[in-house]
Length: 239
Image (cartoon, rainbow, N blue to C red; front, side):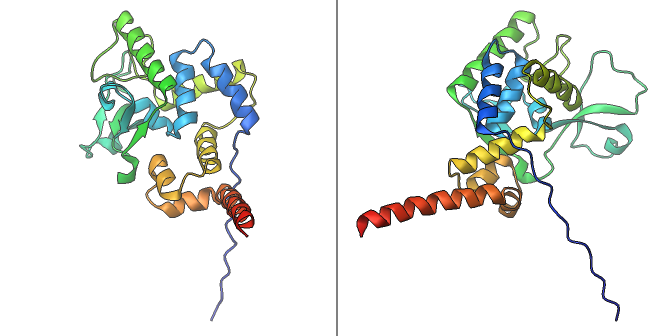
């Protein structure tokens, strides 16, 4: 019998903004905020994925814009791959090459758990109203249209928004961070505020709670230590 030993898979350490870095970055984003900067801030405050952000439409909001439902993602896909997948809807793009092998599609999240509701702060609600007003002034607003639009009316696709994100980092004098760092930072801050695993898993759209535990085990351990310290201090006072 031949025994085969596979090397252990080591999980890469995720980059997370420190609280100081996050405070500095947010201060830059809210100063003279525009739709691009607001999109970056929204990801930092909600843990959304970039495809979910680009797919966000006005019809996803409740009447007061206090929350929105994530129900789809926007991504560039091969036309050949999408051909037999009716759940994907091609988005018309101004200036698109008719013979291109790829196109922009609105489709479902990768898993059912990706469909979820996100509640927003008063500051975010105000920003959404500002963006809507800008679109109305520019003649771009549609009740079922996208929230994040370019000047020509095209929605931002993930790769384009990623380029804008890099521009924001440069303007803020912040070292380059992968876009997913915003999502990791949100999850880490949530653990620091003692979010429970089921709630955070639902907010992040994880299909399994174990995914949240495995990805953020270090942050979870820190949260457990803080809670045990609180418990022990209360116990000491009672003795």
